[in-house]
Length: 253
Image (tube, rainbow, N blue to C red; front, side, top):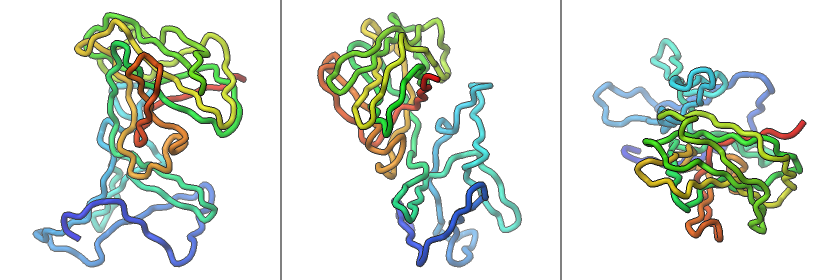
């Protein structure tokens, strides 16, 4: 299949058991050996370098995920490439797992355009802290503000998320403790959103997310969680169905 790419499903004749804590390799290879000058190649699409896990200890160096990686075999040795593969696994009980994203991308936050993450919890929990991956371009003229809204669009919490003095030109995790804990109730819609009213596009904040999901059924909760945007000062919201912000929620103890 030269020059053909896409998502390919492979169905096994019978379920393959996976045992907890064991290591498994999914191997992709040609059916027969290819000569060095053969134009046919088997290529597997993967994350770009920006989408490797962020390293909290040294933000200038991407972290290595020891539990999920792309490996290359040259007929003698396996080489770890330090990238996440793009793959999904469908289990016999219907559960879908994997890594569906092809790209990490920044969303520019400025003016009265809101960017945020929609969350529909699968159970009740109290949110105490929120964290997102932020950087800046130039020197923004305003703070980066956050709001947490419910499905009626009521603001449950709001405040300053970060300032230009707290950032440098490389992405970093920014985590804050919100004003008071908020109960996220099961199956209800919540949005954590950002804006910076006085900030212009050439000196702005960027919030990093994962985009172009090759399988929209999974991700941070699949289509239950998704990137969202408002261009009318938070009055109405539009979904970005194949993208999510990189985020972390901490519950109250």
